[in-house]
Length: 519
Ligand code: ACM
Ligand code: ZN
Image 1 (cartoon, protein in one colour):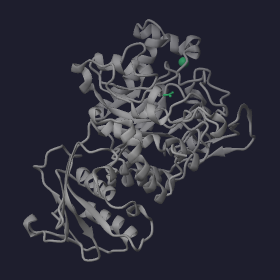
Image 2 (cartoon, rainbow, N blue to C red; image 1 turned 180 degrees about the vertical axis):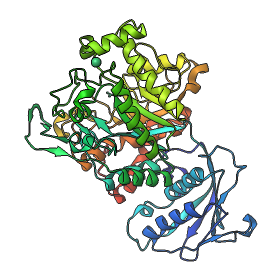
Image 3 (tube, rainbow, N blue to C red; image 1 turned 90 degrees about the vertical axis):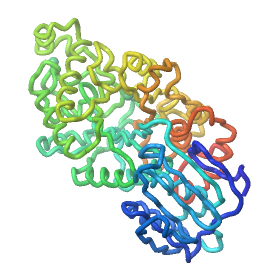
Image 4 (cartoon, rainbow, N blue to C red; image 1 turned 180 degrees about the horizontal axis):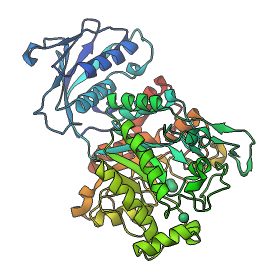
């Protein structure tokens, strides 16, 4: 194997090739230090699926006991690179993966898997393959700590198996944050025990628009939701893959499904139905009604019990002010609080929610519209309308996650030939644009540390099936993974495409319905 045949994605920080190979065969043993057993068992299972070898996993009393022919997984607090960093040393006699913490050790195993022949991703044992690993030394660590993928389950719902596959694929690419967009105008998707109508009524809509003709409804009822047990299952599944699940509960806009369930929470107070058309609704939570804050705090209390994530996403995007302008309660709140206008009322709303979350040890993150009317004091901004909002927030000293639609909106077309593509929301975001994404572009050097990472966003108005979701996300998510993990100077699109060519053979074996950029 020469240097060009290594197809690691994301590209590691440091890699030195050496001569020779290590071969994994039925005699290979996995030796682990105390605490590394769970990662080792997972890796042993991945190897077993593809190779058929049931390699024994033995805990070592001391690292020095690792013998020739072993694959050693060592947790060592003194390893550099943070909790997600790791090193891989491959010699003809031994493989050693070393990390300070479990997430890094797990990433080391995923790098090792990429060093094996692509058959290592086969779901069933492949015979006739020599499982060679090239001798080398890798030191690796992430560039950003928020390496995210978002999924909108409000517009279309996806089964638990798909959510798990989405998480598996994220982990494979060293992505660590799953932004789960759980509530929308067109559907409320998370069970809340205290408010059963949210799912009895709010999870069901009467019809959906036809993808190719957005003005005509199909007349087919659509709905569903995740139970709290299912949510716990997803959170635990993600945790084992080093992924934090950040839930999004939308407020004050994108809330029609909640209003249809509890009409008294809207300014008008009656006549709501779970929205069938896509787009932006004028009906939003009433910002002048104390019952709305009580409701949202009760909802969030259950959400906090389910999600250990430090960050809680509260939406905040696309909230028209027209109802607030003519609502006596909203106008009274503006008077009472001495607010200048409805934008400041939105800011007041978000600040109250932030206070609630901070009081419970969590941090608020919201879309960049939360800048309008003044940003809540500790808020983190998710920049989607380009990078402008993120730049403004970082410059003001707030943390930022970048998911600018210019580089990170995977619901956009990925080919200029729209005729040959499934109907999408519009626009054009080719793989190369994603690869050229730099989360800190346009930000002063002394503020760049406020950019905690980047994220690919997958809105699903025009994505009714799991196959299409994969098609839109992959391989763009592969390019994104490298932009948030690997340092900028290492970026070379042609070299990435060469590595991607091999990488797609892995995705083939994992049954991923990606769009083939080489076809
Ligand atoms: C968004 O795309 N409305 C955040
Ligand atoms: Zn109101």
